[in-house]
Structures are given as structure tokens and as C-alpha cells.
Image (tube, rainbow, N blue to C red; front, side):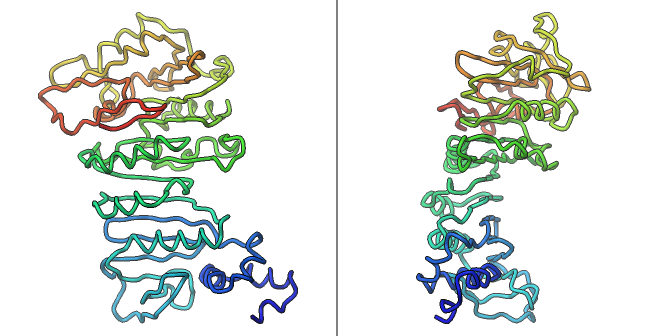
Amino acid sequence: MKLLKFPWLVLINIVKFMDSVDLVNLSSTNRRLREQYISKIRPGGIGILFGSISACIKIGEFVIVFEKYGSYKETVPKEVRTIGPITIDAVCLPPKENKRWQTVVEDVYTPCLTLAQHIKTIFPEAELNFFRCEHECDAGTLQLLASWDLNMFKEKRFEFHVNSNENIKNLANQYCKSNQLSVIGLHYEGFHIVTRTKSFRNNEENELPVDSKFWFSHCKQLDRLINYILVCVLKVRLEAWRHLIKKWIEGKLNKLVFVRASRVTSLNMLELTEGFSTHPWNDEEMIQFKACVSFYGFIVHVSSFFRRTDFSVYFEQKGTIICSRKNRKASLHFDQNNSIFTMVVWDTQASERCLSLFPEIRTRSSFAFDAHILLMPIFYNDFFLFH
């Protein structure tokens, strides 16, 4: 091949400026060339998005959209295009730039995973950045996902209906158990559950990067969805915990219910709460929450029209009381013997349905609500399972 006749540095510069399609195709067809530059060149981060009638894969700045029904005009010319093992009739958008392909296929999901696997095979160091599923998976899609190791992706997101079948719930639970950071929240007035999980295991010390605080902190839309945060086997610096608490104090996490971090080896509560409005636990002050339910920010006495939320486990544990700017109350607990840090928000603005999602917040059903929409989880190896 003529490229191999160039000096090494010249060859690297040529390959470095290739677009993702040419780089993948060249690497697929010439093993010798690939082996020479594989440690120097990568095609860019890979991300996959599954929608209800479409799916897309992103490779660096290049995107392929697979659709069940075409969204482009019939007058737009299509061409046969190939990348790795995938050959399709596609529209190139914009026409003169090789940055986005759109095509109509019957199976929109399999090509994304096939191409991702191919790229990971020829570029073992390629980063699998994210996998997102934003619709209700059918049986075929679930079977496909079960055969693929999604844990290779740094971040995963699932959105599913509260009435989803057990297979979908189990899939979301699987990634909550196997990742270091999980965020769970209800969306669309409680009709959908959103789970986001992330792993930082590429970091040698399994530590939350200093500059990232908590990884969701830059997404304002997600802030409104956060109800539960679970952390496991991930070192979180004091500054990051303070950043999270400060956001709640400022009202930016007004639907937060619960934060739980396991295997926390040390935590100085005085340093954690320095500068915040805190005071020691007082039974008389907090007794109102033991027998009441927090419902959209209002304290409502237990009646047949509301499920009673039982915070008694944490009431007995006591803790340090912390107040928000709107005088809402939360408590901080550090169980040094079991290495567990917990933050419980007693008068959260989260909806009633949110309060039924976590094991220590036991919910009693009443005739005013359908029992079948409840998801009652239990702990399993520091995480929880939906049932």
C-alpha cells in the first residue's frame, strides 16, 4: 500500500486528519497499517442512542441515524455507503460533508451495536462514552442488549414506564448494581423512571474526578429529575460532597429525597458542614416528620388519601440537621462501623410516587392509589432492586 511508503511521522499525520469513516475503513482493510499506528490514533468516542423508531451511533463527530421510517425528503439523493461491516443506502447530511448519514432499515438497533463492537475490536483503546435507551424496550431489543456487555460504556441511561415488565426493570437494576454512581428519578409526573449509571474505573484510584464534582451537576434538566443518588466503591472528595449539599441548600435539587454512599472509609462531618446552617438532632423538632408525609413540599398529616412514608429508620439513627434557604430540613448520617454516608431530605418537594422507590422509605398503600404502580425495591449488595 502506498501509504506505507511514507516516513512514520508523515504517515501518522496523514492518518490523524482522516475522518472517522475513512479511518475505520482503512483500519478494517489493512492490518499492517493499523498495527503501526493503533497506539497513536483513535476514531473518537463512541455513543449509542436507542429511540422508539430510530437509533443512532456517534463516532467522534460522525453520526449515523438508522430509522424505521424516513424523515428526509424523497428528492434527497441516496448513495451506497460503507463503514466497517455496515453497508447501507444512506443520505449524507449536509450533502457535501461526510458528517451525518441517515438511512431506513427494518432493524435499527443491531447495526449500532455491530459497528460499535467492530470499532472496539480494531481499536481496543477506543472509548465507549455512553449508551442511552429512551423508550420502552420490546422483547427482541432486550434479548439483543442482554447479549452485549453494556458495562463497557462509561455511562448508561434507561427510561422506562412504572408499569414496565420485570425484564426491563431487571436490566436497569443490573447497571445500578455494577456501576459506581447511579441516579434515579421520576419523570413526566411520575409515569417514567430514569436511571443513569456511570463508572469511573478507568481512573486508577476509582475516584470521582476533581473537576467534575458530581457528573450530572452541569445538566439543569437532570437536576429536576434527581430523587435518589447511590454511590458505591467510588472515592468522593469532601469538596464534591459539599458541592452536592450546597446545590440542595440553594434549591437546585428540590426533588432530592435520598443520597446513599457505601464503603466511605472516612468523613469529617465538621469539615463537611462548615459554613452551612446545621444543628444537632432534636426529637421534638423532627417528630412532625415521623408521623407525616411530605407531599410536593407540604407537610400533610397521615390520612386515607395519602401513603404514609416511614422515615423511622433514620429518625432512630438521629444525625446532623441541615437547613436549606427555604428552611427545608435534611439530615446527614455517617455510620462509621458500616462505612455508609446518608443524606435524608425530610420535607422534599418530590412527588408522592418518588417516595415509594427506596427500601428504607416504606410505603403503605391506600384505596386512593392503584397498588400495581408501586415499585418496591430491596437492597442487594449496596444497591437496590425494583420488584
